[in-house]
Structures are given as C-alpha cells and as structure tokens.
Image (tube, rainbow, N blue to C red):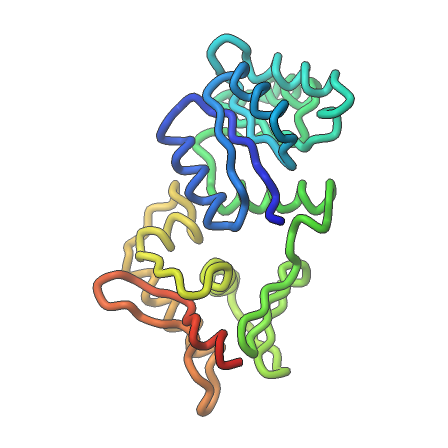
Length: 233
C-alpha cells in the first residue's frame, strides 16, 4: 500500500501543487484546509506523514503540531512544517514544538519530496520503495546506482533525477513543463529546451548498441517511459 500523506494547507494553489506532485510520486494524498479538518481526517485514518502549514485559520499549525505530539496515537507521525517564516528563531520554535522538519516557502518540490522520502524511510522503511525496476533497467534510490542488463550506467545528477521521475509511472506522458517542475523544481527558471538536451544525454547513457530505447517521445506532448519496454522484459 502507498504511504498516506495528509496535506494541511489553506492556500488552494499550493495544495493543488502538493497533491499533484505527491500523487505523481505514488503517494495517497488527503487534504485539509484547517486544523479542525485535519483533526477530523486524522481521526478517520492515521496518515503516515503530515505536511502542515504554519498559518492556518482557527487553529495554527504550531498549535495543531503541539496537540498531535501530546496524543499517544499521533506522537510518532512524522510532521514537516511548511511556512513563509524563515527566521532562525521561528525554525527553532517549529522544531521544538515537535515538527520533524521545516521547509520555507517558496520551496523546491524535488527537495521537499527528498525530505519526505527521508522521513518515511526513518519512520517506516517498508513505505518507501528503494529500487525501481522496469524491463532490464534498474534504479536504486538508496545507492543512486543505475544498471541495465547487468552493466552500470553512469548518469549525471540531473539525468538521474529525470530517469527516476519517468520510471515511477511507465506509460505516463509528461510535458516539458511538468518535467521542469518535477525534476528541476518550480522555483528554477530554465528554458523548456533544457529538457530536450538532458533527455538526449540520458538516452546516450542508457542505450548501447541495439538496445531498445525505453524513452518515448510523444509529438506535441512530451516524453514517457515506454510501458511496452516494461512489458517485453
């Protein structure tokens, strides 16, 4: 079963951004716009991790975090605090209240996903798949090693993140804009043609001789990791 993440965020655009990227990562996502809604959602099903906005209507994120840590059933649920408050004393306050991590808005989506995976690995390693294997291509998230047909594939950091992103959902077509947001982060401003350059580098690294190309170009749409490549392996 995928890990369940509760997103407690009253800003609609941010909630939509988080849901999209978390679901693309394979998580089950539940959202709440206030502390009261969050407590109701937690009572219905205990999440595996909580993304908690500091500034919430009615009950603040800090107060909700304090209440969750005081209850036995929620005392160990990992909590990442999301906030526009970046001052050191505010970070210390959030962490001392019981948050496991602290992310300042605007945030990098890839960095936030990496922090989520790190927390889930510590809390419950079974919730995070360490390896992705599609066809004869295998990516190990723990060691950051990639192998194809028993040979090591050497990738740069961007090509590695790009391959991991595509391998999570074979067959799903991602636009260049979606790949920029998911791999580079929505706060990094680069041209969409950058995606094409790195796709070319990735293809040259993973394809040797007569090996089939697992990356499919969808004209006018973007790129996908070919599900047929997975089926024939």
